[in-house]
Image (cartoon, rainbow, N blue to C red; front, side, top):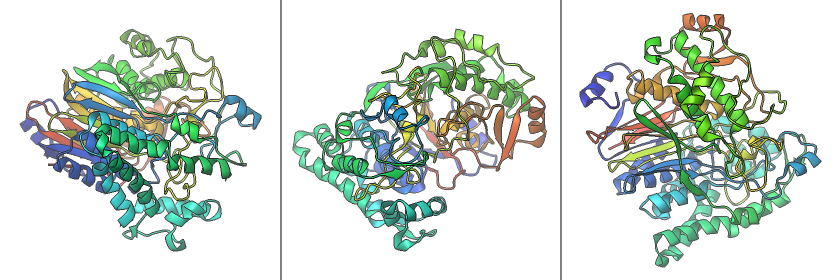
Length: 591
């Protein structure tokens, strides 16, 4: 297990795992698609560091997994920079347009921002996030890390089942409403089948413009050339095309009406990603870092604080006592997410209180070891709304992806790209990608910390994780899955730290999660008392949970999340990686 001698790691892998633990001395990468992981490994082998490799995988993921993320979306990032010994977050969430106000939506008779169309578009932040990480913590040029993605878009990649199914699911809308999407994703008027070579030449052409711009600015130095390339996207002709599309195109959305977007060129030109401190707590001798409350990331840390009061190992892995305790802690942490989290540049989030041991001790006393709560119970950490707006209906996102990397020097990066996915918004003609819909996560209640305001970042679900041990690199991990992200990754982390599993065993273990609290996605409904478990959780355990009042819903045996993780053994210098088999395409690679 991580932290143990290498022979202990070898013994732990004697049992069956769905995939091998990938072990390397120079570096290990993980991505939601194996071709993206291959690109990351290529970057490492040519001398790039972990940040270079993760950025390359991020761009590739936008091409390979367009039903899960795209460059019109966002990508929160956590980085450990070995040379400076810094742990930082790249605040990789786009901002609301200046025209997006609560008053405007109310004047249109809208109570909840829809999850499709153009109204929910925030500034597409992915390109700036990747370039910011590359400029400050990477070593290579944009051309070096972007070329694999451009090659895949221009020359094609083999179609795989999940993407083909995703295109097929939305074929009717592409054909009837979104001709620009149909032109790319329905070549020859049909859904591409498994193994067919699929291309997106418009995407390749768009990003070749950025490389041209970097080359033109090369005489000014690497960082200046990178900035010149990002300005082509945010201040040049690409931004103008995005703004014109939003202005001139009306798209039918969940409100039942067709409307143009609110994003304009000035919103794009005024945007820049921020590099800021991560938030963290200490747990079991480890420093666990997350992005701030502009994401749901601190909820992971609040869960750890609550769980500190229990002997988890003594309960037994995935026993009824363990699952009940874990779920009840999650309910309390996520209730605080709903009432306190928001962009700290606009909202006074009491993050120190929320992450304190004293506060967790008070909250922990609410847990009944024999009975499940069906109430949403936020704590008293500071001023908050008295209640949430009424909602109904199950929210649904179109998922996400993840990339992470560690190199031999101890550089680490975890990023969770999402949004800008093809099911929610039409492709911008000529650019090869759609805009995002993350604005749906704003509330239209001015008293809420996540209330819509111009220039504000919506509280996103995207939440990479990074762990240090006594100031040295230890682990990076993450997953797609909306509100489930900080539930499945939390279980993965506990599997390693408290139950002694190696990385792949921890990823393979059956998972569960709560739907008790409001969804982050339109139409924002909640399912009080509902928990979902993979079928591999024994029936006897499920029955015990039901007797304690949980509404247990059983899913497929491999149905929850697609966690990826890498562990660095600082004593030996060996790096261990793994990928969940869920979702078919995620993979770890190393050398």
